[in-house]
Length: 366
Length: 262
Ligand SMILES: Nc1ncnc2c1ncn2[C@@H]1O[C@H](COP(=O)(O)OP(=O)(O)O)[C@@H](O)[C@H]1O
Ligand SMILES: [Mg+2]
Image (cartoon, rainbow over all chains, first blue to last red; front, side):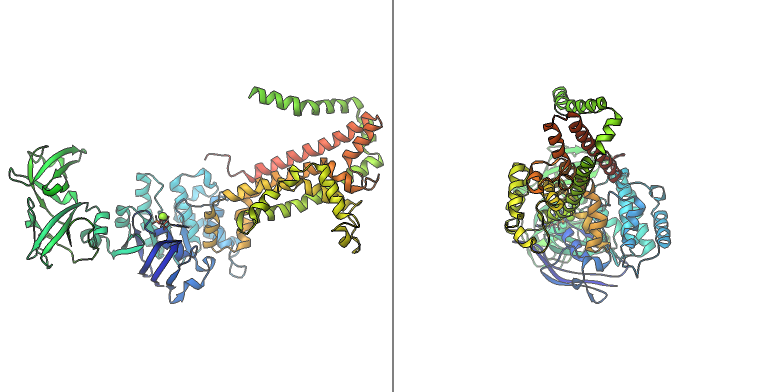
């Protein structure tokens, strides 16, 4: 089954929450919807499951029109952000629910349902929880049960809304690996929502970056990480340092900036903005440098520097503290050597959203 | 805390104890004789039967009403919501008078029902209607807030798992509101057992036929038969207590998934 979403639009009153979403999900894929809170991720997921309806657009699965189907006919395994396990049912009854509500002619006999539940409990590594009520489970255990309940109906597509949002860091990491294993074992087409880029990048085959109701970029994790296609994606993915530069013959020019590590770019001459990750900036002590260190903070592993440049340009740099570059103390003048970055045309301020071919480092070209 | 408890003791417990002592004073043999006297039995039977009829109706209609008030938007909803409390706010005698006027042979309802061979006034139906009228808010007001607070995600989850509307109600929503529903139904039944003001106007109070137990107790009192009055009161009390116990057991059962570790 291939899921195709065409030009999907959803308004709540005056607010356009989804503004023309186009997306294709292939059978067996594990896709992450990544975006800041309020970007419309949950709304998109709810429309796919039939819990909400678009104002315009199409949603087809394996060629069939899903907008003509009710939620209960679509067989989407929806895992809610807060699990929504039925509180008055034991774990095994929660998992069996989707099978026991099938129309009589398609409902498996009780013995078979019981066997399927037992099998799922085993598979999800929670057989010891079978006779507990949801209120007797930890967050991570609830999440596993919620996934089991969704998997029990052998869903056409599995939809997970911030599945690990409410859990602490260690459990999150464990469950992430576990979800990947579950996905690889079942081969269920899966779409999950997150605002955590690490989670999206680690888990997904493809990442869909959403911002303000639109898809900003779709791609493999590394691709997106290395080459964010818009200023929005760049900022969201941690390229938080923005330095106004001038492009000439594909080279960046800016006072105090050593662009030699960046490759030449096929882009028109003129003002542009360079987006950088703090960890991709190497400050080099230089009495003539255009930047001045105003603050140096250690996080233990990292030395985090705050830098002030010409024309009120503020930058931040991060480097391993133990590398022990001498002279990186407040007051010191430095020049900056970006190791990787992304450049978009236009000066600082409201930057044009036009996607631009990415800037590669020399290293990655070799 | 102390004040509250002593207040409860003086207002609630003391009269009950006095009543039980009075009953003990009478002795089991007398007690039995009074209880099984034909007129007492008939009154108790009528009261229980009518209260059961009223409660079954209240359970169904109250649930439906709570559902409509929570789940639907319609003009006049707020007014309807306010009207629900009228049976509690109205003096029961006024309710009784109004009901008997409506259902009398020449009243608005009676004029239609009577020719169809369905007399209400002076029958058990009248008794049940009066009981139902004065106690229906219990069910509605018990269920309504729980239904309002019910997280829509449970229903949505059930829908994505393939459940239809009826299944969702029966297996997801009803179990969630069941404890509150039981409370409402119990209170409704207890109130119906003891309802006096509204009933006496519409019942006709024919001994052996439409005479309710609490009225018989009043009659005994007026005859200076304190023992007779006390026995009837005690029997009503025992039934109500039994009901509360059963209801609490059922509630505990319906809530068994909560109590343990959260
Ligand atoms: N039922 C609704 N009514 C009105 N506004 C809504 C509703 N659901 C979501 N929104 C709005 O739509 C926007 C996107 O919401 P959502 O899809 O939940 O975003 P995300 O899951 O990415 O945080 C938010 O601004 C939210 O306030
Ligand atoms: Mg959300």
